[in-house]
Length: 127
Image (cartoon, rainbow, N blue to C red; front, side, top):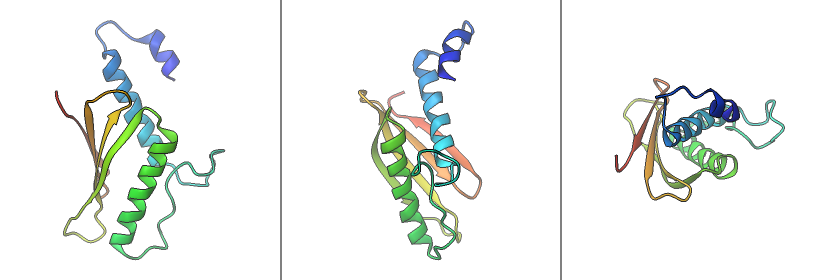
């Protein structure tokens, strides 16, 4: 898809950097919404089935490990700075903050995931 975007970019559309960030976010969305071992020729791509875990803390830790593994192995444009499981009072509500930077750049990005509302937010530091 990225190849076709190079030819179809309309005048006045996103800058090259904005388009790269948009592509990375779309790729993260695809990776982190893929169920591991289901349909991908890359056997370890995606997120593990968490239905057998009962503890919110255990689920949070596994998800952080899965996010780290998937980014390190399948999104080479990002370098992880930190991943945090942010505690919420509601049961089974999971909230994560991923701080990362584009490889070779000093500018950090922050992606916040909220499982209860399927919400994510992207913040770019230094803007």
